[in-house]
Amino acid sequence: MKKKTEKLLEILTAQPVIPVLKIDRLSDAVPLARALAKGGLPAIEITLRTPDAIDAIRLVVDEVPEAIVGAGTILTKKDFTKAEEAGASFIVSPGTTEDLLDAAEDSHVPFLPGAVTPSEIMALREEGYRVLKFFPAEQAGGAAFLKSLASPLADMRFCPTGGISPQNAGDYLSLPNIVCVGGSWIAPDAELKAGNWAAIEELSRQATGLRQA
Ligand code: 3PG
Image 1 (cartoon, protein in one colour):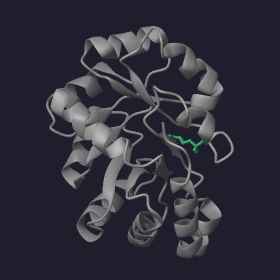
Image 2: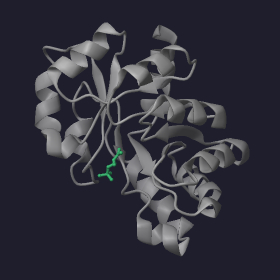
Image 3: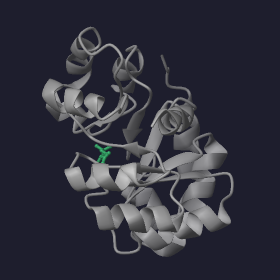
């Protein structure tokens, strides 16, 4: 577990923002990952919210060596296995289930499970987890909530996602218990639909300028 936590931290602390991606057209996957990496955000989370998500992960893993491809919105053990087989470097879930914890235990791929309440966080801490997703961040209490966890749960660190934007990202990134934030604003639907890779590269570049604790 320690090794997987170290690997996860290595990925998540290398950039202030992890782009959370919903890829509707498989042909967008490679140019999108290239643009994000070129802008300075090689680690990405491709969510399993579209039918082609697993193929998109496989394609980016095969064709964009500079990308570090995570799989997100993993809800079941089956999803976990499929993402792992597609070559995902890390696996993200909005929450936690026993089944997902079992899958993660059997896997060499680091897992970022979701938790919000102190009890959920403590349960994962007992399982050996030290880095968690905090979702939906803004709706669940935002940066103020996370700040209040830093003292009682001092060895737990978080990647908040949900409702984060360039305007509020700094509130999170300035906290000592935040490793990075996640957000979909770096790859807006309109730019994706238009294939405007230069605009996405620029959004990626701007995001790299956000502060990281
Ligand atoms: C996620 O799964 O991490 C979120 O849906 C991303 O939230 P956002 O779209 O509000 O950035």
